[in-house]
Length: 322
Image 1 (cartoon, rainbow, N blue to C red):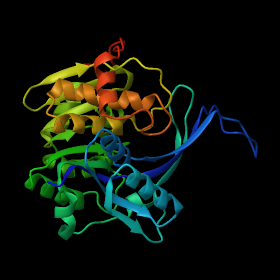
Image 2 (tube, rainbow, N blue to C red):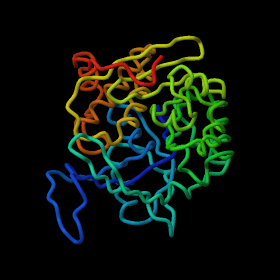
Image 3 (cartoon, one colour):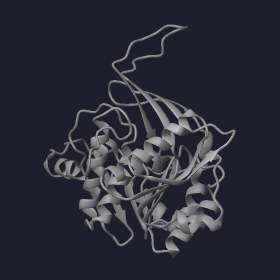
Image 4 (cartoon, helix red, strand yellow):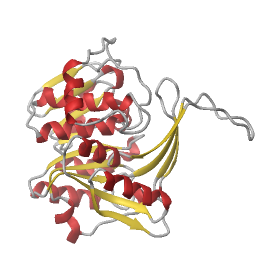
C-alpha cells in the first residue's frame, strides 16, 4: 500500500471564535479573545492529525471551487496530505461552519452542508481511494450522494484489498441508521460518540449499544464518552473502559475526529488495544486544549509524552453504564 491512511468523507472549512457567550441582539457586536480557521470534519480533522503524527495520508472527498475550498486544499497540502482525490465541485460550495465556542468548550455551530453531500466516486476510482493500510470513512450520514450502497461498495473494496477499516458518523436519530447499517459489515472499528450511538439505537447501556452494532456486522465498537473516557467492545469478547485525561478544555471541536487519527496511528505502530485507545484519547485531549480541530496536536513524540505522563480524570460513573 502506498499510504498509511486514506480518510474519506466529510471535509469542512471552519471559522471558530472563543469565548462566545451569546449572539448579539439586532446588529450589535460582542468582543471575543480568539479567532481561527481550521480544516475540520470527520475526515478532514482525522487526516491532518494523522499527518501531524507522521502517517502518510490521502484525502478523499469533495470541496467547492470557492475561496474556502482553495484554503482547505492548501492547508492539507501544507501538512503533506495527498489531495488528488479531493474533488473540486463546480456550483457547489465547500462544506463550511461558523463555530461559536463557549468558555466551557462546547461549540454550537452554523453549518453549510455543501460539497460533502454532492461528491461521488465511480468504482474505477476505488483502487486509488483505498491504496492505504487503514481506510477511514468519516461522516456517514452527511454524504448524500455516497451514503448507502455507494459507500458500502467502497468499503467492500477496501476490505477486499486488505485495508483495516474505521468508520465515524454524523448521526442524530434512527433515521440515519440505514446509512450506517450499509457499511457496518465491512467495518473493523466503529467509532461513534456515545450520543450518536444512543441516537442511532435508542438504547442506553454501553454493552447493549455495542452488541447492537456488532450484531449488524461491526467487528469492534469504540464509543467516545467525553469526560468519561472511552469504551472498547470487541466481538472477540475484549471489553474495557479507559478514563479520560485531566485537561483544561478550550474547545471540543474535532475531538472525536482526532481520536480516530490517534487510534489509526497506534494501529500503524502495532500498539495493543488498550494502548491504542490511550493514544486515541491523548490525541483527542490535546485537540481540546486549543482552538481549532487540530490546534493542540503537535507530533507523535509530543502525543506519546502526553499519553504517558498526563494524569487521568476521576469522574462519576456514566449514566449509560455497563
